[in-house]
Image 1 (cartoon, rainbow, N blue to C red):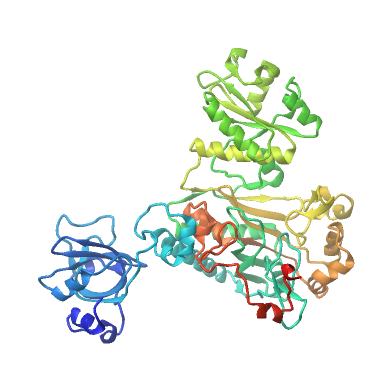
Image 2 (image 1 turned 180 degrees about the vertical axis):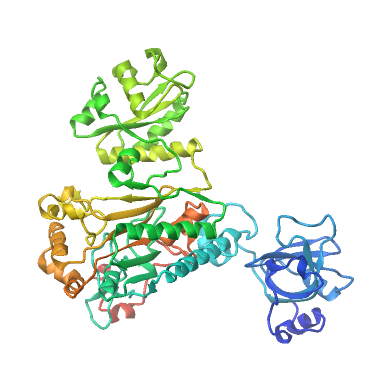
Length: 619
């Protein structure tokens, strides 16, 4: 590259950096036919360079898009000389006249495709090494490489569009809630470690050796304290931290809309959220469809029909409990599961009766990977239709001789299967059977192309159990968290029969993902202490971990409830992305590693000494 004086000469005697008030007068992607005849100054990255031997074409890119810039050696020889050296991802400033593209040279794929800029000034602001991957291409790039060079990855169209959409979503939420009387209140990041369902990230205190802060898993107690403080309607776009085991849709830190309201019942919260999401999707994703009003499923019905509390409602394939019919067969795997307290469930895959052995083996492998012992396929052969004249010869199954025609017909009736369909059945413990069958249902929904990509199937799941039994620890756990209010008619069962207590708890789901959890909260000390007692906390532990909240309840805390929708998962739905990391500007890997900064990393021994920390290897 030439010297600064050479650059100044190359742009026609005008040094843009010093001579202009702004480095650009318009963004690249904003130029239209209306600007023809105007002189513009642009700044951005070289997306592509095309040398036609005489004219040089540069696609100049910024956040708003790209525009074609033409360098002509006859009208601007110095600028053409600079353009000969330009390479991909160099940052440049360009000045020139907007003109129509020649007839036949328009690019209808670009919003700027009807015009171009004839350069009469150019300056190189920064050169670039050869990028680790193409910015303008759509080729698959290794995720670790992308995360290591995230500053380059963010220039690519999918990531740029995601960040813009994320901004619009968060802004819409803020404006929506502000218009309904909510106050945005920030809560602390350094708090005390309290059990909320996952491991805390802990932060050692230098001033108080041996003591620790914790990063909040959620602002749960804090938002309830805000309600006790009379805030009435609170929200924040909250950062939350959970030291959880890796999973595809999890991150060590995530962002959620945290929302709480006083003097409300469950319907008030659900109606607000339905209005928010319906209007949000209409504003930021026009053309997408929703199921409205949002369907309501109880937890019990969701588990019975879909085997999961977050079913994808874009397609059917409802499950049926086949235990009674299976009990009338001679199949040992059915009888053994039922004798052991298990269940037999299945569903019908339409038009799949002719599945090959290889296809069935893939399905068997899938359910086994989810813990099931195996899969019983029952194919009903023939042209699709009624089974009233079904014969034993029309039934194909590796266990057909143990089933009997009457049992097969009953199983077909329960699953809604007809000729041409494939019935898929799993037997085993309820939790394992539901988990495996739900995964199988999702796989068939994908294989059969049953999911409408333009449909967002939002729904509410309600009436969750307040407690669930932990077999390993032989104790009761809170299914969601310990602060949820039981249904009024179940308050007396908190100590005597915890397994029957239904909470005023609700989830928002969409397309197979849980997007939000919420509940009406406990606001009385006596009831909250009874719940803690059922969960096995001693009075000393309760006071140590939750004393601040319980004390607040004694000073006139109002009834209140709320919900906490995840922003990252919402972006997964809105972008059709299956990777939560591509909804976050600077995420961690699935193994909770930051390749860009190399975190987690070691710290200096002096820092450990200041914190009075000694590593186990040093003991």
